[in-house]
Image (cartoon, rainbow, N blue to C red; front, side, top):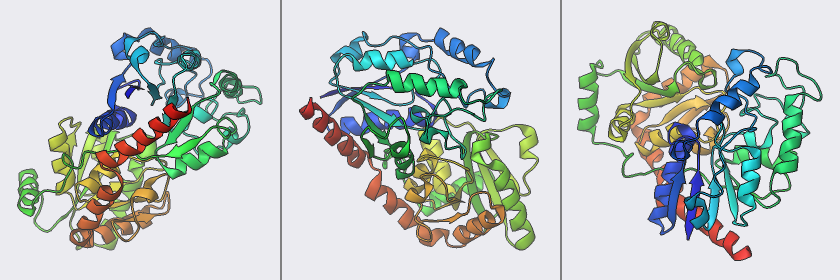
Length: 402
């Protein structure tokens, strides 16, 4: 069985999840290959997509929160697609595939699977609805647009999707949270939507010996006895990642527990002025690309903090758990499916920075006792063989029905 997986970028959350799925599929005997925009020299559609949205965008802050899929690369004749038994889409926006391109892939007659990494497939253009429920009907009056109206750009894109989406597609949601929204949506409610999580290499991301943890902390200069927290985001200032709530939570901790020593590692790109906001000792790790270094940072932390206001099934939480690091965060999206409250972490109501501070303290005080449960969650649900076989079973069913 040959599977072609399509994703715009090999990096980023969706790209990483797609590449990990390739390893998972190969582990269970499936011949899987990835096709990205760069491999088909797909550059100009990116600029065409962005320029076509400029007249409609509310302001610059929403520029990459909305996609039209008017422009894309024609990949239906690519050898990888021609040889495949299954075509599996992942995140295909920003000029990789247009709606017509998706339709052309379906015309090949091969079973088509689409893994949802955000809400775009069932909205009128936004990647995250931020509480808007227009996708339950036919969109329109989109808050991301300069002139929201009943027949605005979001409604017209919704109509194009309704017209151009192939009749036979099978959708995968990485979390039950996203799966429920897809099933309720006006665009996807008639399609099968299955929930299969992302995968992780539990050998590469794994706990390290206590001496290794101490050595890492000594190299950083972490004070003996301090609670070492970790925050990770490709871009720290991304509003969805909730870094401001973390700053407020750390301020609460400083006031409520003055005797407590807290230090924070930050993985990702961060502006110098953001660094100055933090009321504790900070260790900027920068943008790490080496998996061994990333895993070591996770394993050395006492608590991984994820203050995101909306998430699907974040790779960062999975990586932390795989390294035996319990999690403190908000109860949003697919995070409660990963973090078992009071067992391998602690969750607070979304946007409540004081409750997040208590979550960090609760986990920090029990980090050693929670480490085993964190690792066990990954071993039960997210290893390469487990997730690979779930996908392989779906592929076999689709081929048998063909």
